[in-house]
Length: 358
Image 1: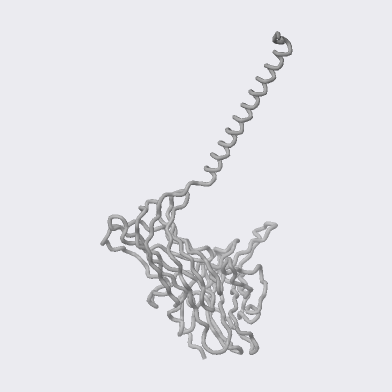
Image 2 (image 1 turned 45 degrees about the horizontal axis):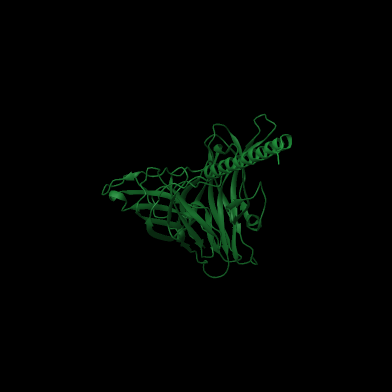
């Protein structure tokens, strides 16, 4: 039997806004109010709300959160937000969730599982109640709710894995959905949910791992500096990457950060580019950069020297100038040719009208 620990991760109806780029700090000054990266917080600290899934519609009137997770995943930040587990075929697991009506009126809320997948575009949600293999294994007790304003209720989610299930990782979402037409022809639907990452197979959990490539600094056309790094999933489970970038040893001993870094869900064998946008006032450098990334309890970091340089010239301006130069050159050649033709014609007419005596 799997021991469970209570967690408090909330999935909000609106996307979580990433922190604004950190300013430049003078050397040797402490930075107040900084939070540890996800996965490094003490158990008694509140977990950062999950930024997704989210959808259009009246989603601001419903909330959902995972209430417990396996004790052995206490250090896994993903398991406090999502259902993340590895089980053997034939296993049944149960998780408690809390659904809340955050609106000011009584609402009907439907709670159900639907299909999801991890592609090159990240974690993708199927439309409506589309089913896949994993969602067909998931049952939500009392999935049709009527909740008063600010009322919440606890539900039990059961995932029953068939004994003949093939060995691989599967994905789904447990949605809490509200809808209403407001007297209009078009019905508005909003839903929020908890992702499910379920690995099935004999033995222990497949290894998670990733590699971070070289840090590169550049500037966007408007002069905004950006740091990029390619990340490749070398393990056997999908990854949700998040972390922080820090800059030190800048001009005059300046430091910057930490600045939040995130990336889309990374499929098995997939590659993505992590982009961290910085403050436009940041000097060119050189800087020493350090990028820390984690997916649950799997963590990696990389360091390197960064310079940002000048902003690149915009392609549109260059092409416009080239086009105008070509137009001027072409127009000049046409005009010169026309003048030459007129001169030749004029000379010919004079000779025919006034022949030169022999």
